Amino acid sequence: MIIGQILKSKGRGVTTASPQDSIHEITLRLASRKIGAVIILENGKVAGIISERDIIRLIAEHGADALSMAAKDGMTRDVIFCTGDCTLDEIMETMTQGRFRHLPVIEGDELVGIISIGDVVKYHTAEVELEVSAMRDYLATG
Image 1 (tube, rainbow, N blue to C red):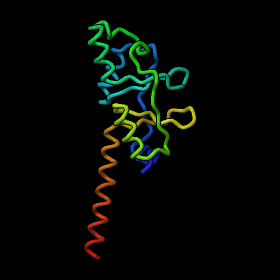
Image 2 (cartoon, rainbow, N blue to C red):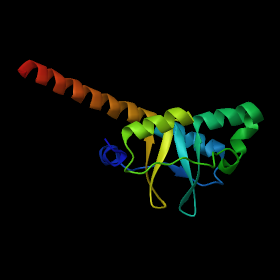
Image 3 (cartoon, one colour):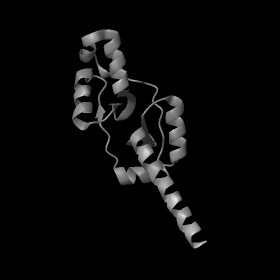
Image 4 (tube, rainbow, N blue to C red):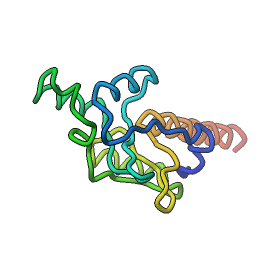
């Protein structure tokens, strides 16, 4: 399965913020949408990503003052991307090696979606179940 197929099924909506938005504003978005990361856009382009983990690190380092900091001060700037042509196996390897749970999907220079580890697990499980079902059918008729 390729990522483009997953995006067709789950949708292409992505929660974004600007580099100037406060960490507090971002935590409110994360909580209200029940998500784990926000993409930071600057001039329509991906400038970074900030996750719950990033926010926890900021609070550990700066205490309550972290909530008034700007997203640009806590975001990951060197964002790893994928495209709609990437396979589920490639994404699993990228996420495992990078130890992150969210991967923006771009086409050209444009953000078109985001894949989470939850999406990966869901679709990988579905693939495995389909293979098991096919094998059972094959063995039953064999």
